[in-house]
Image (cartoon, rainbow over all chains, first blue to last red; front, top):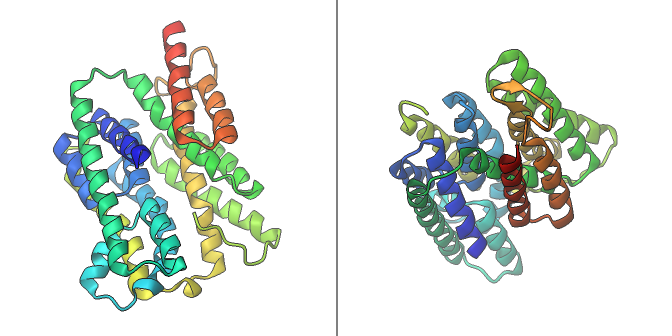
Length: 217
Length: 107
């Protein structure tokens, strides 16, 4: 939980640094509630990306939740639409990890799962707002602050190296991003590079015929 | 910065909520094809690599891979090594911020 709060505070600081007000940070955490996506928004805003490019990247980044949501759906199937709305909105990587393992052990009711998700949600909103307030008081070196984001994305990239095909996808994505950014001079380059790299990785893994192996991440 | 961040926030909210909510309502794990989930497993790594690449190879708005001008390059090598070794977000970020601070003070 301490590292989750630290991440939330960091996220609030970088969003403020990118130009979002404390009110906008509050609204974003309340309405979006997606750590990686919020860091992505800060980073792309800093590099001057368009609203549409950011939203498309957030969409791709959040596709991983389709798998999580589908995996956990059997445990909450008979709940009403109101319950599922809250449960869906508060489904994050962290809450999925906690809830899914409890559900599999059979020691968890949907209400307990929602309570766990809501406590993560509340913690996230409060810690990002706190980060925004800290950001508004601190004189921040922009080069260093921006680099903290890059270091985070580098680490998240490395943590996705679950097979050599995933490493190749990263190399393809880096090359395509650099070439397309130089050619197009627009952040849509990131979207195109992401598509090229993910299909390349998929193609390589398919050719190796790795059967029904699945990565839920 | 945008004229109105509310448009961005609303768009982000929509594309975050739908992939979390619709499968709860409509799908179970068995109904997702292995092909789709295999392709999806490559998206995060591609996105993080693209985000990094769009930043670290550029210095003052232009492509620059001279590690003495572009002070983000050497710290990035360090961060990758630390991330491979520790798999820790905290250690990677600490090392990265430390290294860029040194580069910033020296160059």
